[in-house]
Image 1 (cartoon, rainbow, N blue to C red):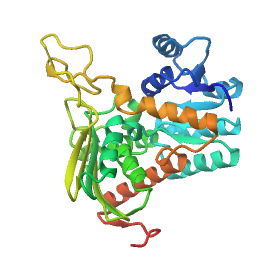
Image 2 (cartoon, one colour):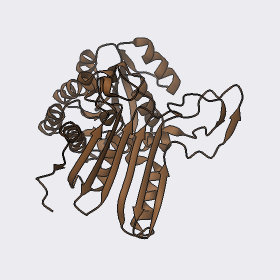
Image 3 (cartoon, rainbow, N blue to C red):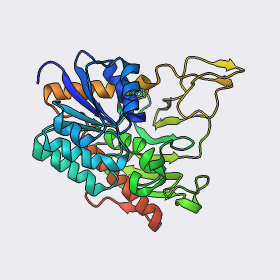
Image 4 (spheres, rainbow, N blue to C red):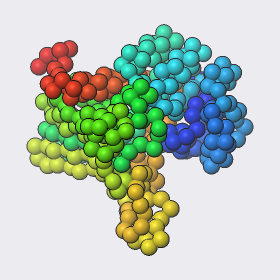
Length: 357
């Protein structure tokens, strides 16, 4: 492929806004040729905000995939739609980016991976943590041996609850906070350890009336997993919908000769006090009055800009994305999420029989 990657963006809401920031910063190699959303007004607003011109608008993804001449379909839709849209795109010979989680079930995720192979196309898995600059720098520090050999890692993504109505139902989301938020620390650790985990044990709040706060949500509003890897490293992976004050993306790395604490969301260079309140401080902030730490270039710092450029470069060069960003990695992350749920439900440790230790 030469020139620019022609992109059909399917979805024009929250996830599309995150991805569009990436496309806006790599216009040299990417072009949005069409946007699809059942709410056409959202398409216009998104395109105007990011200065997209000469694009086609669709309110039906079947028509869009059939009619648009593009190289790649970027799926920014609720979880339960990832599978169907991806399969349609592969039938048309398009590359695909899928937001996390890859699907709502491991079976659907496997069908997506298999369809990509049969079509000879790439399935890219949008795990933004892997392009967060702070995490990249932290891993450089680990690599140089500054904190010795990592022994234990604690990683979590937490906030006060999803804005999407689809997250209230397991059928549409695939679970609760662990599949929606915990997919990030799970995906990050699996990428770091090349999917070589050996055992895990987990607990969750249980869902519905058993939840701490979100009683009407079928899935859990708190979950945690202890997981071990082939190299002996252990990790505690947590997610919840009971955290107020803004989204927490925090990673702690403990080594034999030191430790590191990485905060992706509140590591701002700005500290501000406001009586009336700011327009925006950080994702999921409950209020902006008083003291706050307004995010600086939030989408870049969370990795969205870097991941989109990486996917565009992979398309142009017809190469696989790096580990953690391939369809197979999205499948492995979802399989681990499902085993976390199994461990929590059955109250027992799960051992990865495929890896002997």
